[in-house]
Image (tube, rainbow, N blue to C red):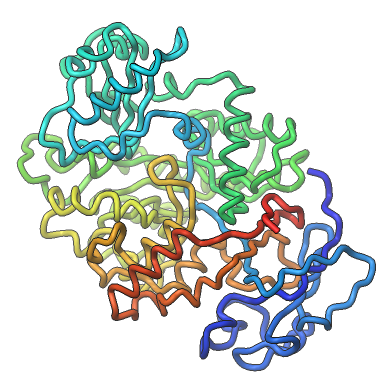
Length: 543
């Protein structure tokens, strides 16, 4: 990455400075009024021209923040922000970036309300022309948990014939294939054509394959789109030899995002053999590529009724009535202990309440650091354990909006502790917001809006007691960097055409008027992003 030229960003407004009585910025992770690098802060206002500030950026780092007109450096380019809001750039704490890049080019099935509707979408797409020879028609995003009919290979065969069709569920934990599609992924025959969990996950790479040059170009496009939404970094948990792929991309000139590259069990030996620890910066990447966490998936998902729960799913009997525990403690604990001994943080997928209990038990047994990914259904007794163990709750609020109806059916009577962001926050847990793209769009504003409103599409809030405050949601989206730029921090910044704290959501959890909250959530989803800076270089700019 070419070093950025020094910049003086002038006439910026800090988050919350257009909101009365928001309190001292220093109390929320910013620069305190007495700091020598911040000249002019008094209580909740900033001295100078209309409460505006100037920010000096040099060598990819914020070197000074002060009242407008009082940060002098005549030898650098000046960019007038014109009163726009400036804050640290956003992170998505859980993505599968290559899959997201591919999904952006696939048949969208997220609106299908039945197998018949999904088949009609496949038929219409095939009418436009078949896929390239040697490839399959790939769709994504279906959720069959509430469908009135049953997906089968025969239904797809009726419209696709010998064209391979592979439809991947919205949670990535199952796929629905035509007979030709089954052959395409190497399955000779199957009674239904719907592959779930262990049947599907090892085969997912068959439809995720693309020549490196194409995949890298598509990832670059997806990264540019993320930068246009204010994203400066992602934790990429792609199920592949992830570090090799990212080294190749950075060697080829990638520079749109910071990337923490997760590692899965098949590649753990390679990372440990290199002596890489979580947070280590890979050379030759301009400081933008880090070794990320060790990822393990311990259970399934809600949509497939495979999330591992204390209670059985309604209507299910037999050994899988409680879901599927894919990595039991006898395997999980040694894996985590080995990764921890090698300096890796652990990112443990747990969705059902029993899986979450076991994941926290494993953190306690190993003293490993890291996160529980998803934490969708929780035993109340486990809420305080996140803070006690120093385990981050890495959550995806938009999933609550996608899955609320499925949860009401399959977790009936338990949804008060599903997607329990408010309860986790009250218990002192550190929250990190993400998307799990392609399960939800890679857009942190969607996650923030869902977290503070628990509503979407004009529907009544779902378990509004589990909302979190807007300030909390924003802070959970900046990778621990608070809400204001600070001297010495990376110059990873986002410029907004609106102050998010001035949109009417109040503190989120304290907002009483549902209509106002819904309007604020809509505004958050549509947040206008004017520019994004990564290490002091523009990755997106509209002015």
